[in-house]
Length: 230
Image 1 (cartoon, helix red, strand yellow):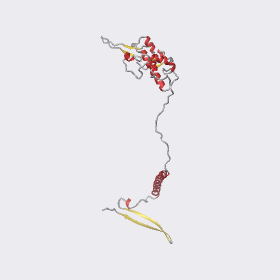
Image 2 (tube, helix red, strand yellow):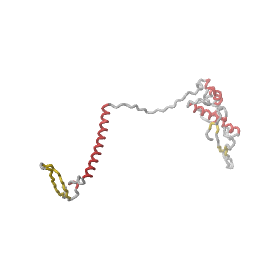
Image 3 (spheres, rainbow, N blue to C red):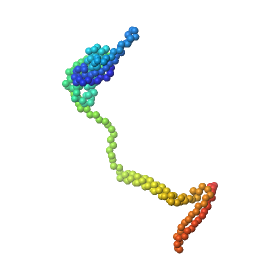
Image 4 (cartoon, helix red, strand yellow):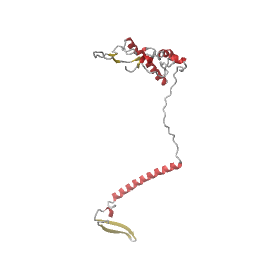
């Protein structure tokens, strides 16, 4: 049997309140034939039509009552009282009627007893239940909430200084790289020294020194030979 689906009917006591579909397979006969029962097109899908058409098994009254009880419980748990519900005071007679056989259901359906062991009428007489009512429902979720707190002045000062030092370090590295690139671009021999010579090489160094009588140029030539480290 498929899920129960509510119809357009608003009469909670009507068997047409729910619709469904079924597919039953009977026990195989002696010759191996299997009888399959389904609700055919046009036979209707309400539980009332199943009763009228003798749809295989005699369970539809119990299915109808169980579906309405489950439907009413879910709506009551969500605080919905603006529709038909067995737990509303105006449906007390219907609830009493549906629950009058609850004590014998164990023998009829071979089912285990649930929390309700008596009919609503008897439970009310024994003061085992309260009045019928649907209270507003509140849905909430628990979560961790962090409240922003101001750090101590010393901790805040240290954090700012560290951030500034990191920024200045990055700025100094960029400045050094830019100046080095400009110097190498203007003078291709700016990096020539002993350590940069891979073997015998000759470099010319021209230095301008100020003198009393004017400027003088001093040129020095030197030769670098291979060095061995012992």
